Length: 115
Image 1 (cartoon, one colour):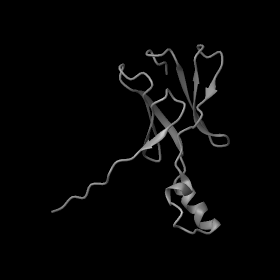
Image 2 (spheres, rainbow, N blue to C red):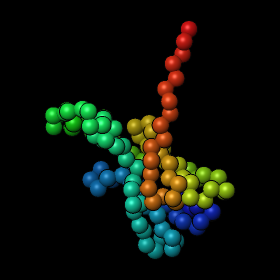
Image 3 (cartoon, helix red, strand yellow):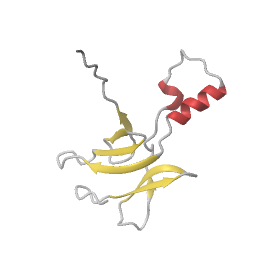
Image 4 (cartoon, rainbow, N blue to C red):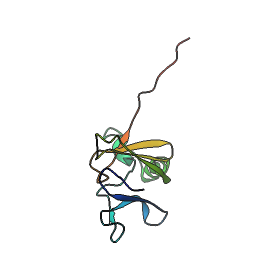
């Protein structure tokens, strides 16, 4: 995908051995660069320090939080040239505000329906 706002080219790399990542090129694909921080789930950080897990339990949690595949990137509005969204499996959305250098997961508050 080419970002007409900046001229940057993006490629999704889904590699089970070397990890999933987004690469970019600023010279029409002559050279490619990895983001400084690719989209990823926080792993143990999401649990905080109050949890004490065995290695097996930690492995189970990390398996549940594994980013399986990067599906799609979508550019933000023309008025925000560094804003990019990234959809991944397992069902999550990430955002970059620095033109693909770093990514953060967008979390949505859970809504409870009362009857």
